[in-house]
Image 1 (cartoon, one colour):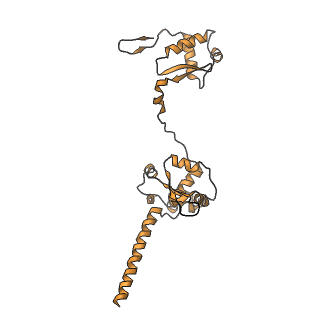
Image 2: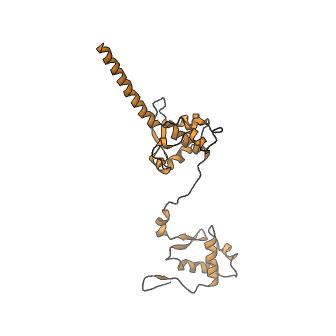
Image 3: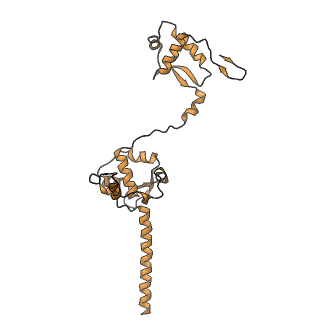
Length: 228
């Protein structure tokens, strides 16, 4: 392999037909191959080891290298370029029914504990169901419930809202709205999974408003009593 003046490597042009065959066989294989496997595939008998050593040399300065591990040969990414291959690849995966139901319960009942989720679903779920939702960054722990045992409560994240293009939780439809739109069969879906359509944060706000209104009413009634 010769180096040109502009520092571009010149790949050898005198590649034999057998070298091309061996190269193609290794490239197409889904697993490393030993010499006997390669010999059984090429068109004529030759010194395969010698061919492999030559190909190994030809590829030594390229982005992929020909390597031999445990007497089996395969093409691998050059070691000094391995960091480039560590980039994450997006793979679409469908959520399981258990994960979808668990997410729905958390969305409509949050903050909610694991045992409460199982009680609403009526069945225990696998240990990795919550972990999957947390890996997606749709669900996160939201403190502990003030009951014996202090179980962890779970709720949705901002990433959940961002992913589904929601401004707030109450933008989500209720079970009646889902049924009216024909998105679910309300006769076969447990309505308690979807709660009442009123969400935790909004309940808290309503609770505060009720407290203040009660105080106002109490003060007004007290003042009226004093006036009389």
